Length: 75
Image (cartoon, rainbow, N blue to C red; front, side, top):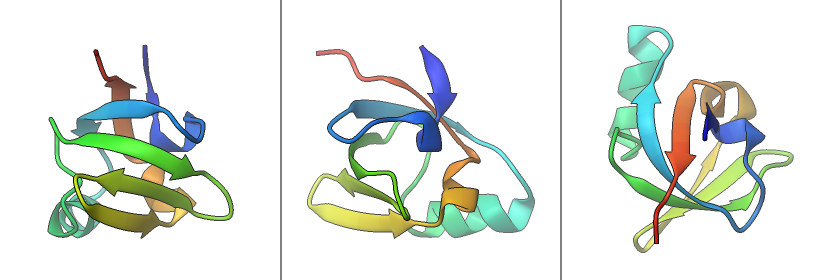
């Protein structure tokens, strides 16, 4: 199932499928490790989206998180 990161629920495990938006937004997300193929665990979605990737926890503004297209992680 493909959706944006803001549509996820806390506790979900997802994989980044694509990062859309302006070049500046794509670069900003890439600079914090949000790239296609990266697995994320969603910790919360409001007031900001908080995700965990490996041992890093990131808080991402909802507007930026809406540019991140994800799919369900398998396994």
